[in-house]
Image (cartoon, rainbow, N blue to C red; front, side, top):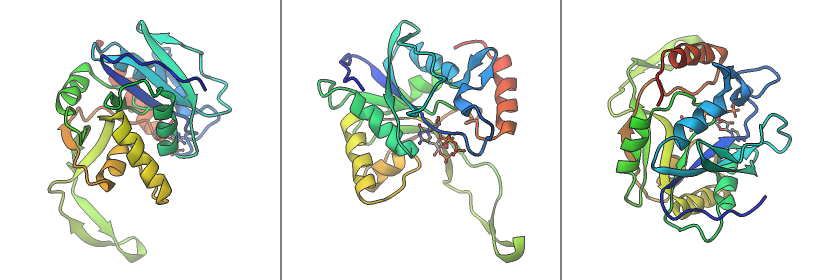
Length: 238
Ligand SMILES: Nc1ccn([C@@H]2O[C@H](COP(=O)(O)OP(=O)(O)OP(=O)(O)O)[C@@H](O)[C@H]2O)c(=O)n1
Ligand SMILES: C[C@](O)(CO)[C@H](O)COP(=O)(O)O
């Protein structure tokens, strides 16, 4: 893995893409499934790198990835690869390390799943506008459904309040070193964090919730892929 010089101007995208897609199933990792002739990861990278506030991207790949097309540039901006880890948080941490020490500590990083192909510029802009303080910000969507807690035997134990509950989306935006330290701390404590905000919360930070488009979906199952196809077919970029 090569250390990278980063531009002081602009945020950097960090794209974890080292997952196996176990819940999706199949041989091909889901980030390489195509919609409109482009793999999901390309949709994600183009959405990020075509935004004027994003200077480049670091992509974390599985060590045995044979599908990565070898891009070093997308939308005229640099794309760097590194080897990801066992869990998503390990992959994000590896990508943060791949940004060299001469990158500013306070460079803003936007961590975005390779498996979220329907990201819009307006959401990136709103996130960048809100992520200036040291606690960072994430895109999120309010929970809309009535929530049931399961008891024994597949029966409902109770109805949970959805008040103040949000679904975490990506990108999630933080200062590079603050996020690196938070992820390292969680790893040392043996805590499996499922998103970047969770690692930051453990340090006492209170990241801002920025309401994002509800159709910024993560492709997790085949049903999600069909929905993403529907959404992207109607989309006029960016
Ligand atoms: N060790 C890992 C695990 C996940 N990811 C990435 O994190 C994003 C969101 O994770 P998820 O949807 O959980 O992807 P997978 O781990 O591939 O799916 P599954 O949990 O079903 O195996 C994806 O872009 C995935 O490639 C990663 O970079 N490194
Ligand atoms: C980061 C994430 O996409 C936010 O929704 C999510 O946490 C990824 O992992 P998950 O296992 O699918 O929740």
